[in-house]
Image: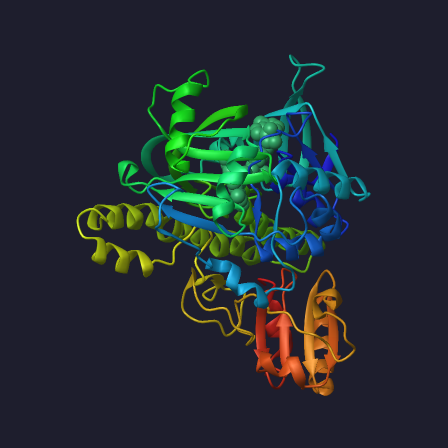
Length: 525
Ligand SMILES: Cc1cc2nc3c(=O)[nH]c(=O)nc-3n(C[C@H](O)[C@H](O)[C@H](O)COP(=O)(O)OP(=O)(O)OC[C@H]3O[C@@H](n4cnc5c(N)ncnc54)[C@H](O)[C@@H]3O)c2cc1C
């Protein structure tokens, strides 16, 4: 039976990104994807700064930026309006966009199908990866020795074939077969609301929204819809848009009149438009209770699916990839233990669980409470005051700082793994490493390599001790030496051990008492 190191079920953005992450490290990986074409709906547009760091690590950040449809530098962000986009009450929340200085890449906005095309081209450049289309996986089995993946092809739909792998990752979306067959359950919050997604062209809407500063999205809070958002987003400047809004359950794609009426009410003006696509989705939040079962993992929407509020779906899925990719590589390469593989679920699951509750559901609840409590008709002064104090937008809030403080594979972290935090330049175990410029003028992130990196600022002797422990324990490590001055002082430590996903594993000013123990701990052995 043909055998791979990793088989990925599902060649959406998360599956292909994971294949890139693995194949760049030389892992033999096969992606099995049912569809031959990438879906053309302009979803998954909002890529956060951190996601762009991933694309830099995957060697295709310039290609990604060139694939955008909006002009370079077009202001990404949203306007929030009360009742519609014609009124006097609106604001411009900054949200997470203000945290840009803590990342080495700027954010970007482009339809997911363009992102997927970039990833597929990148994957095609990597020798140890294979992407097969027209393949539907029907079953995944595992035992102590490995896994077997059963599938049928478009060419021979009535004959099941089977392949083997050391590990399987289900990147097969919200209805994940891999998750179901692994017996992983989900926790859900169903807001019991059908939503429309309309894609349309309308130069008139572009002209109407010129009353606001230029932005990419326009969100409406209408008391008639409680906390459920109505929002427009740009796809092509001046032409194409998408719209999300709540519709009665019986609405179908043929009910263009009802949908147009809702769009006009949200815009506060009637405008001409031509529909390109009408689809529907459910306002519910689902999160898998665990992301690993033995040799089988899940990532992306297979783990977490939710409304597109905050653009957290694809971004969270890509972070799953960065977290899991190096751990599988380490396990296959013999320098990662089982505890390292366990840490994937331990680190990533709480992040989405909290994102679902404290960001996405909280938005809906808080907006509903605000709309019920304040009204410009009832008490204009009180309303104006409360509206003026609002900061929430359609981007994640500025305190959104996912971290793995409580992880068993970081040394010296704090008490809890979670999403609430503060962006800082200080290097903190369990937190994302902020960027810095080296004295050579180079960007530090470009020097970090595929494995662990030790930043050593005026600490050559200590670095040599840790480097020899890395050699003894088989941990791939590059040492980046520089002076402890300028930007580097902001890290607040002479020694920073950085994981392959650019989170801090450990920091100090002198080598640890047991350097080999440190390296075993951060690789789950
Ligand atoms: C309207 C909308 C707007 C959104 N906006 C944003 C946004 O602004 N920002 C953001 O971050 N996210 C956004 N998202 C979410 C984002 O689109 C998803 O999080 C993303 O698509 C998840 O990628 P994935 O690869 O995990 O899953 P998917 O994209 O669902 O891919 C799964 C793949 O697996 C394949 N597959 C499934 N089962 C099998 C099988 N048995 N055998 C073989 N192949 C299989 C499918 O064909 C598919 O290609 C939005 C989503 C929607 C619906």
